[in-house]
Length: 197
Image 1 (cartoon, rainbow, N blue to C red):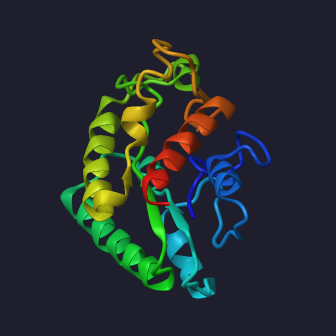
Image 2: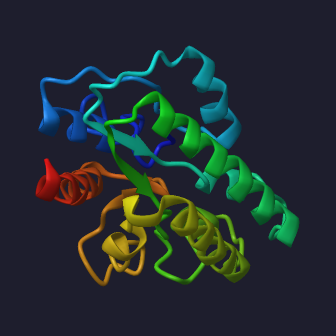
């Protein structure tokens, strides 16, 4: 379940992170939906439609970036507290629905490589948004607390592969994963599942 970090929306059909992880675990059936723009309320809305399964092998969860990007200014403390409470409740419900599952809970990458600037914004004459980088770090702290040992640190894995171009580029359209980025993140997740699979 999740947003465009893991969906096929930008890498292309069958090339998104969730699809690649699914392929690496076949034969499996996917529950839940991944789609660009999804925020925490979109994942919460899926819960009544999930049947659950004691035989589920792995769960993938990615959300939070769009919740942050939808805000006009950096959030106050209460926003992070509410997100943590609701995300924690979502996690608990999913763990109850899929009690045998190993979970992959993604934090958020930073395609700006710490600058708060993206090519599309720069082309339109907009300044960098360093406050967004600070907010991202704080939200990643929230996600880490909720995820515990299930955290997949895609932030660290992808850092440097953004628009600084210090390393090969894993992004497109400012913030979306390209095919190589999706492949690299999926491989990270499959490696995390491997030791206890």
